[in-house]
Length: 353
Image (cartoon, rainbow, N blue to C red; front, top):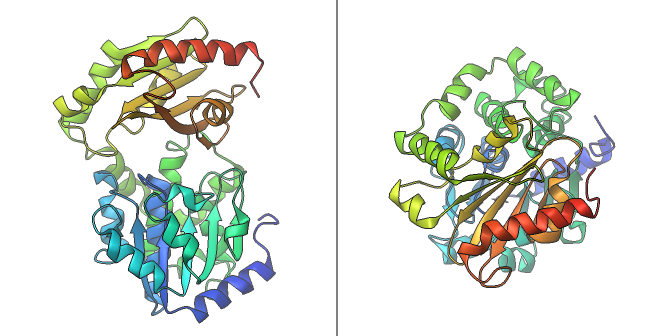
């Protein structure tokens, strides 16, 4: 596929799998579909080969992704925020650590110190900018690809057990990878490459039920989520003269609508349907900071804004970070004014693609 997936790397990967018996599969905080899909697919594959692999999340995953866990690795998942000592003990006793869908252990909140201290072999598979290769023994990193799930799919195709035939992979693994790719491309709306359609085609040929996955992802929402979305679009969306849309979800509003983790996913994309909007920013209030999601149209870099203003990163058209108060702003009420000011400055300095 690319220079990232070479025969030499595949041989080393298979050697690492063969030598390991107790394995930690780790992904980033507040895992999204790509993180859940790639990590659960990896655990399912390894357990099918007789390995004692567990999926370690920093914290909980969205309800609409529970079907992926149920099909791949139910009973073999640990959440660091619920059982931190058990998670750290598992990492310490592992002989292989696999990081998926992050570029640095910094993104595995609550686990990073244990991961750095681990003397096990370490493998990274990721599609973000600037992977911290010094922390890993083997790295597969590719930015010109839709998702970590897509990259993992093409890696697995090159292994000796699969030999390019996707149908040789277990169906739960294929479904998990298709799920992660679908969510990270916003159902083929962004970050799509020729290889992405190639992956989808091969998965359909292997028997993956894409319609069933879409039903699980998008047709199982709670009424609260839809009503909250309507409220945010009607009452909270602002469009600045510079073409930036801003939506701020206050903590009190999230509690009023009983919004769960993952239920605001996708709202940030909606303002981009407007012709005059070139960048959309969604803020979700947390304890002492806003979680920031940024999406942009081609020609405007979401990544540069996230990395320079929001302590974050990501991809050119899809990025994120945090906005702290106090720190970046004095208090939460100043968020909208701050966004308008810094995006004005951003565009005046020519920070576009």
